[in-house]
Amino acid sequence: MSADKHLQSWQERFEMAEAMQPLLGKLYRNQGVEVMVYGKPLLNASTIEIIKSHRLVRRHVGEKLRLRESFPFVEALSKLAVKHCRVDIGKLAINYWRNNKDASGIEAYMAQELAPAINHGDDTPARDVVLYGFGRIGRLLARLLIERTGKSNKMRLRAIVLRGGKKGDLEKRASLLRRDSVHGPFNGSVEVDEENNAIIANGTYIQIIYANSPDEVDYTKYDINNALIVDNTGIWKDEAGLGLHLKSPGASKVLLTAPAKGAIKNVVYGVNENDILDEDMIVSAASCTTNAITPVLKAVNDKYGIENGHVETIHSYTNDQNLIDNYHSADRRGRSAPLNMVITETGAAKAVAKALPVLAGKLTGNAIRVPTPNVSMAIISVNLNAETNRDELNEYLKDVALQSGLQNQIDFTESTEIVSSDLVGSRYAGVVDSQATIAEGKRAILYVWYDNEFGYSCQVVGVMQKMLGLTTLSLPNV
Image (cartoon, rainbow, N blue to C red; front, side, top):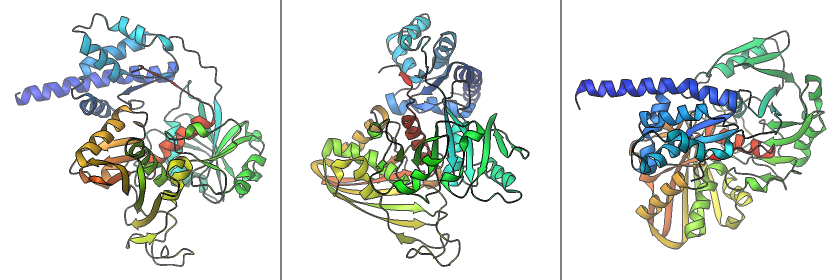
């Protein structure tokens, strides 16, 4: 292909992606339809992101999906009265073109495949969500909730509860939402309503409430009712402490974004979210590390069985550590986080058993905090009940990442060049680095990357939806 043809091909793809954007936006905003390409969401996607999502289809099916092949499916979808569902146009397009040679039957095909979603009613009322705390996880959860703004959105971010309230606090909080040193600028506009003590982000009105204890707030004063309170502070971790939230008028359930103590259920979305019952008032979304390793451990145990093992976490430093040497109640954590590797403990290995009881007592764990601001790695060393080898294990995990019920939790890379910063913004709980896999006989070592902030926040959103009884029809059924 000549240089001119390469440029022409790129221009055609770019223009096709641009043409898709308004259709994708209207489908979500007006009909509640989320469009995907082999699991990759196109909600608010840029033209480049749409193009890249199509290139990744080769990983799934071994062949390209061109934008000119998928665009007719988006057009057909926009003409159907499909409502309140997720539609994977990548899967629909590949299935169609494998069995058909022309585009004449696309509209009939789409109408047939998406019949369950035609005029699909969703009577589930929108639910109020309150973020209690606005640190690293709180701000990313805000971004994830705000990006879903629309008539069909069933989780409405209504308020953020903070300690303090000093002069200038509101503008500083808004500024931290606008700009993030790790995750980049906010995708949209953020305004401050000083008079009413609120932040307006992409049209979402967020009340800012100041309180020093979970039971100090009357949410009904702000017309917030039956709300899910997402506690991002990490201060209260047991039933007594988290139960204080339920004393506040307008609060109905509590989700902790950290490992819980006692009998509170620790939930890893994709693994044991079905353990959540309607009567569960307090639930934990476990830790970022537990979310990263549990889906991979489940996949490995399902096929090979795990006799025992050890998980070593190479974890980015957190706000819990000091910038320079200073007093800290925990061992070693007082030493400068940007200047040292710091050995510390992690309860993630033991916490796996709460989500995956079959592994109870089989895992040990430790952690090393390292001088990076985000993205961590878990090194999983396990003794198996059945023999395998590197190629077989990698092929199995690749299939799990692409085709199984864990495909939204586990990603898989074959890159020989990938490093931690490449995973910033990953929406997966964990990413298997196949090039680092070691396996022989009944022994295996897996290296799993994870964005301990954004990937974890995506998992938290899944638990929020489950707690609120929000389910979405996903099509096609393949």
